[in-house]
Length: 394
Image (cartoon, rainbow, N blue to C red; front, side, top):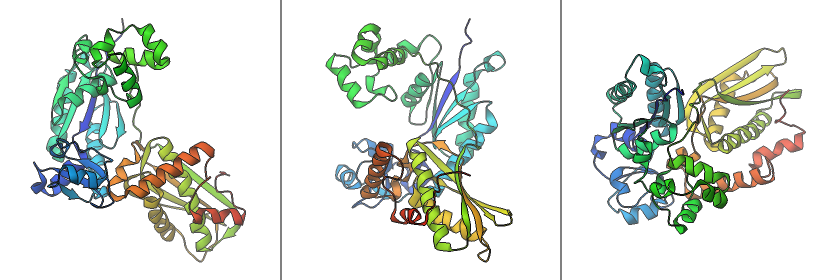
């Protein structure tokens, strides 16, 4: 007999807005938009009060202000969000045996097996109360037999609530919900389902799996399973040791700042592009330098969660100045991005304008299609003329 699974999904409500309200309680109860300028910025996050007007994240700020002219715009301070995320992560790490940080404000927890000794729902309740008490942030959770239903239970309990879907009650809970509530269901798939008169998850539950497989291929099986609350996907343990790095050994030792900064630009582009491709964000950057006598120095600093080189580069250059004795030539240089978690580039929306976001998307689309470094910053191209290949680790 299979062991009953107990999966908890935890989500901080309107995370950016909640953090800002801690610093400025006057924002409580008001429609708040976190983002860039009213003219060219985009909405990174918005309060529930603003969502009632049809505003959502990634919407141009201009459009949002037309929908809700009295909304308050707050220019995000992303260091605050990173710090709040770390605070919550510490509490969760301290409280449960196995968890997965799936984004800066979202976690999955596996309490399977603990029901032999404890009440799993009580553990989740206590954890939620501890987060609220110690951080002052509103938080919701859903508990169920798998990740999908747990996440949907969280969404149904928001804002600032909790919901437990007991084993055997998944189909009943899911049936009345619109199909759009299924996590990861794309717009085109939804439209196709609507064409067949499938609007509620209950309609999907009554649809023959063979029909779904004929119309959607493998995705048909996925849809049928999700509609029935079947999800065997595991909790992937969170590890602070996850990192990506790149380093280069020079043929001839280098002590020219411009040369070193040029190669750092190219390496940072390579790593941040990889982060975006894998939907990852880094919150720690480190630089390594090795002198001719093999003496090695490293410097690192915590940063706000990001996958954007224009945010990483100033920090990388600053670390180079700290780590390098400028009278000594360098044999090897490297960069490491660590403390990774899953999350979209959206974390940077509050300080970017539409043009920059479109630029990143265009660069990534071209590079993914035609190969890395098809397009890059001019500074990063200079290395080609100097016979460097920074992408080969020695």
